[in-house]
Image 1 (cartoon, one colour):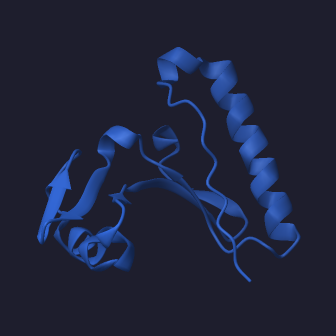
Image 2: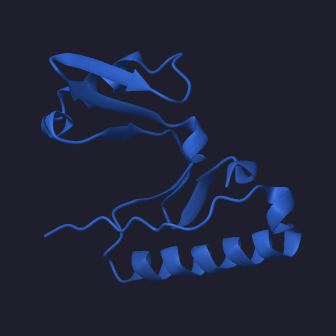
Length: 113
């Protein structure tokens, strides 16, 4: 059986966090991801961009409603989100990733975390 762990925490800007908190957070998440990877239970790990970059898709009264976030270059993702069975009774959030953990290390732009 597979499980997804969605870690929710307050969204703060780098200025609000400060360099020490950012460094400590990166160290802690790196240690956590490496422990999951070493245990053989990690399939993937991603840090998402802020929720302000999200696009939410809902289906109401036979119409696909797209709201929030950026709309350029999302056509394929929005199309797939609109096909999700759960869109009939809930929302599908389309949010771009910022960084991801693969091959034993974090990949992507470090400033995006």
